[in-house]
Length: 351
Image (cartoon, helix red, strand yellow):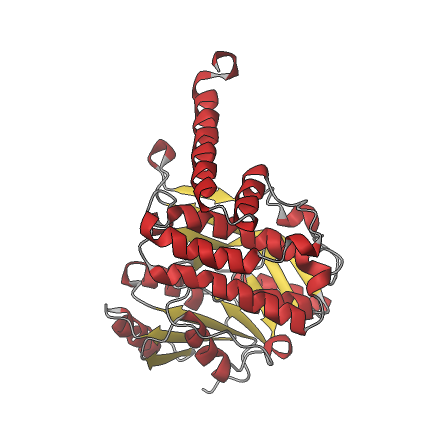
C-alpha cells in the first residue's frame, strides 16, 4: 500500500557510523507516529553502513536510501531535503538516537499550535564518563534553553533571542516544510558546524516557535569529541567559514544588528573549545582566521553580556592579535578547572 503524504520526513545523513547505526535506525523506525518517511543518505561510507541501510529498507517501505559519493554533511542534508515529502521535517544524526514517541509528541505540539518550529529538550550522552559503572547520561532538566523560552507559548525569536545561543542545533527540532523550503545547507566537504547557518536562519525566519519541556533526543559525545583529544583534522578550521556564512545570511536578512550579541555569544564557545583542542602546529592558522572573523566586533559595540571571563579573555587576545597570550589563557583556564576539581575533592576549607 502506498503511503499518503507523510506527516514527518526524518532525514539521517550517514558516514562510517556502523557501530551506532542500528541503534539510531531502530529508534526511528519504531516511532509511535507511524506516518513518517525515513530518508537515509549514505554519504560514501567505507564501512558496512550502506549494507545496513539497504537491509532496513527491505524490511520497511517507509525507508528511502540514497547512496552517493562522499560530499560532506551539508550536501547529504540537501539530498534529503530535495526529496522530502513530509508536512514537517526532522533531522537525526546517525550516531544519536531518539525516544520512540519523539515525533508523535513534537508533531502534535506543532499541529496544536500551528507552529513553524518546535524544539524539545535532549540528553547529553558521554561514554567517557562512567560513574558507578554506568554510561554517563545527563538530562538537561535545568538547561538554559528553558530558562529563556516558555513551554506553553507561541513566540518569535525576537521575544526570546537567547534561544540562538542555547539551542540553535537542528536536531531535537521539528520544522514545517514551508519554513525551510527556501533554505539549504552550505556544502563544504569536510567542514564541521555545517548545520549552524541553517539552524540560525530557520530560527530567524520562523513566525511561530514553540518548545516542549521534555527530553526525547540522545546526543552522543564520544571520545573523538572529548576535550582531551588533540584534533589533527584541518577541516575543523573550516568551522570559522560556517560562522562567517551564518553572519552573512543574517546581514542579508537585515537582522544581524538585532541579534549580534547572541550570535557572537553562540560562536565564541565552540571556537574557544576547538582552538585549544587543535595540535599546536594548526593553532596559528586557526588564530589567523579567528582574527579575521572577530576583527570588527569591538566596533559593533558589543556588551559581551553572555560571555564568561575565559571567553572574554580569549576574545580580547584575538582582537589584539596577540597569539602568545592565547596560550596563557589556556593555562589559566586549566588551572581554574584543576582548582575546581580540588575544591570538590578536598573541600573548600583546604584550598
